[in-house]
Image (cartoon, rainbow, N blue to C red):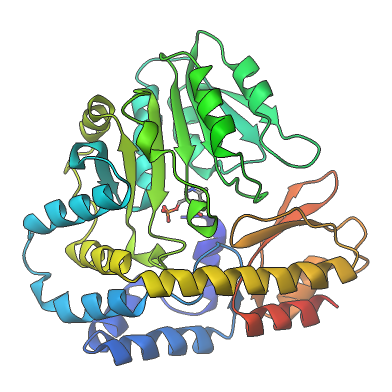
Length: 370
Ligand SMILES: Cc1ncc(COP(=O)(O)O)c(C=O)c1O
């Protein structure tokens, strides 16, 4: 767990045991679970714009699935594993054998890290990018090779290819990139993958691709047997706390990763699997969230620009912007207004990131920093 998440739990005065008890009583009906979420946020009196969660989720169908299935949590229910894998495979136009479930995409990234570390070497990652998980690679003895972004904060695919050598075990591309929100076009990525040796694993993290209209790279995994795509239900599907994500890859690679998972596909609870199945059916929720995010993001960017903050074009549910010309103590303003809102990613240019919350939350955020 990130230290700031731990801090947040402490701040709202609730321990893990406390959450468990409240949830058990409140999951009796979908309505009650909605109340749980609202009261949880109100009690905390915090605006949480740090971790790119979906402020509207879980979807109504997912809440219903949680509420209706709590009583079957006493059983392992192995058959539900096959149902969720088929639903995911269908959504991504691949076969069931191309899917591996994990407790969030974090577990998938971790399994990939362990797999590539079986053989020492180096890994290539853009800088800044999503790198909390790379501590496993470092601990297992791989050398980190950081490739700076372009001046406009995009992943420099050309420089990434050039950084790969015969000892490179892994190249990680976060697309769209966290924290910058920039995107590599699909065609550019296909070309990139073609230029990388088959001996190097290419991990494409599509955690935020649902916030764009761009098609996933899922349909190239059978032709490119060294590609792994990581996806999650944590963001667009609003299930961050339910911990469910997955990998898409060629069967051999999926088998290799699953060998490192002691209970293959079952680090995810039955309830989370059922909520994920329901979420995939809730297309209305997803399209609403997509539009709300675009609208609130546009508002936030235009207000940030009025405060002299340069913003990078975002393809995600967060915004990367510069505090160089902002003339107050940004982080103090956030703290004084009970807003959890990130950190500096690049000292030069004082670049920071803010999650796109609900409109009223973003209005409070803008008011707090005005
Ligand atoms: C780029 C990226 N990848 C992976 C994750 C992990 O997400 P989860 O484990 O909740 O699926 C995150 C979470 O913020 C992320 O931003």
